[in-house]
Image 1: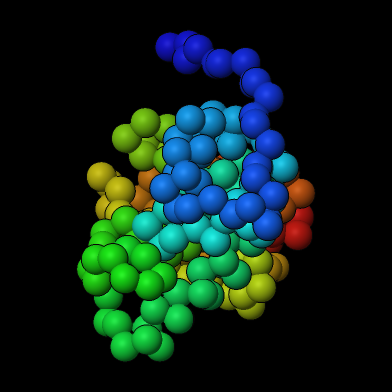
Image 2: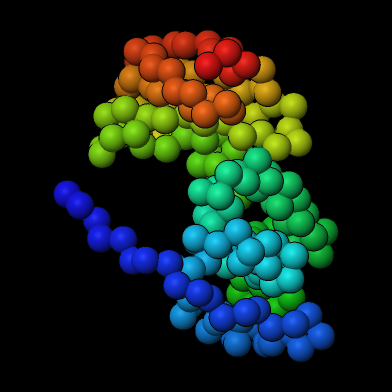
Length: 194
């Protein structure tokens, strides 16, 4: 199946910091230019530095960073969630201040740390094969399990190596861009050697 690709267009310039728009205006800007956001490093930088994306919108920021090769920055961007807990909350709020006090979209770290930091994604439809591409950022290790139709894919990663227990074959995307293939079962892979 071929998916049509819309050619990139020039996105309107973001507003100057001194003329910061309201959240509603920001969302309108991004909704109208979503395709451009995913294709533009400049817009990605704008999202990180100037938007101050609300918790419920942060998954869009993370999903824009990953294809630009900045998945290793996502772990660090999740640290601001501690402010939500320090303010007395025990759930993920919709907004930094106010809004719903239990908002599913705000649980972005629950998904993004597995998908972008541990890097576990389907390599084939139905997860008949998975890809593991750890991008730990500032972490010295990360460990997690991702459910698939065939069972849990368990990943334990450090910057030097990744240990994978998987019910399906695995491909490992190394930091240098090389790809190695491994059978189902348990594999320990040196990430420094592609």
